[in-house]
Length: 251
Ligand SMILES: [Zn+2]
Image 1 (spheres, rainbow, N blue to C red):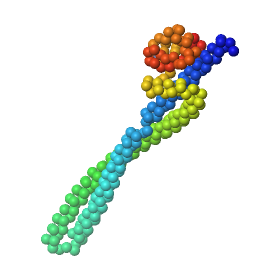
Image 2: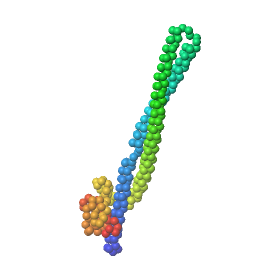
Image 3: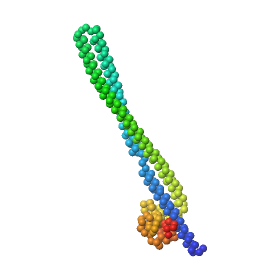
Image 4: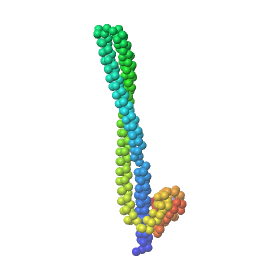
């Protein structure tokens, strides 16, 4: 084998390893991003709390309406019994059976009292009727509100379920891809990669673009760019210390 050919083999090997390492970096970054997105998803907790509060308002409004409706029914019964009694007394007084003027006067006074009482109860019943009418409308409004908030809460929850399933699916796919890549990268290079990721905030590999490190944006000298694909050990950025990778066709 000629020395020239040997050099070509070495070059291919390092540049391939770096390409795989860069792909691994993209995979790991992808997982990190999706995990962050998962943690930031709106689970609908706030919407559920809002719905709970609206349901409580509705229950209170319905209870008040129920109480006032039964109070109105009581008033109506009282009014009808008062009027019944007044009519009875009236028949007694003017049926021609009572001759005693004192008894008649007492009866007339009673009739007058019942008349006033009926007027008062009737007034109270009218006020309650107004109240019940307003409260019925109020309950309908709160019911609409509850339905609207429930729909929104369910919408948020459905989006949460969908986004969660999608992100978890993507994370699982990236996990499979990672396994496959890890199996093709030499162990010592992986060890450096893992160490650098821990130290450098998750990014261990930087692509070189137009003689610049794409992570820290510092310049990478032309002779270094030329050496990167054929070096025996990975060359790192002088500034940010990440492993440099030159995409094919870059130099
Ligand atoms: Zn750099």
